[in-house]
Amino acid sequence: MGARLRKNKAPLATILIVLVLSLLSAAQNGKVESMGPLTDSAVPEKVRQSLEAKGYRLTLDDAKPSCELWLRKNVPAQANKNAELAYPQFAESTLLGVMHFPQAAADFRGHPIPAGFYTLRYELLPDDGNHLGVAPNRDFVLVIPAQFDPDPNATFKFQELVTMSAKTAGTKHPTPLSLPPADKPSSGTVTKDDQDHWIFSASLQLASGEELLFALIVKGTAQQ
Image (cartoon, rainbow, N blue to C red; front, side, top):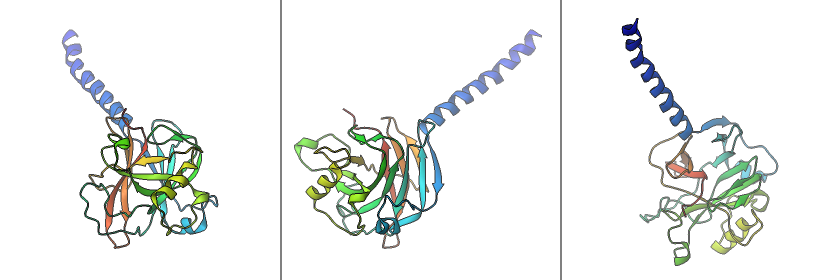
């Protein structure tokens, strides 16, 4: 009997290790569900028409969905070869998509984002001493209340975009989300890195017909 019990200890230990590893893996990976087109009239019609027919619902470390995201189709691109940028293909202020927060969230600085629909426009972190060390790269999107951004093809100067994004939290500061480099193809995944950043990854369809790997920190703040 004792010999049989000793023989069973190894398989039991193996099972426990597998369970622990599975739980750790689950804690590092969120859930992504496919959605249909964005139809909510809170988003201007021209913006809705510019989006892909498929959306993504993201569930992170909460039982409730954290956010929903629709990417732009045929994103305008430029031939910018600036190796210092993660996404040199985008011109500043380019619309990249629309995000919906069903409940209050926070931007990359930890400042509040009220529940609602928002456009996401590409912008670069100012290259000055005030922003040193904020993020590994300068690529961001600024979060703008959708009702203030009705034309997907509009372009804005930096200060204009900052003013529009500041309406999100009702302060003088814009509301940014970080765009880290994307390192592998994805049809829509969300993972958590070692800095507690939840990163959504997918492919963006450019107007040139190319597909661009794309990543967005949907939850998590800059390291202090």
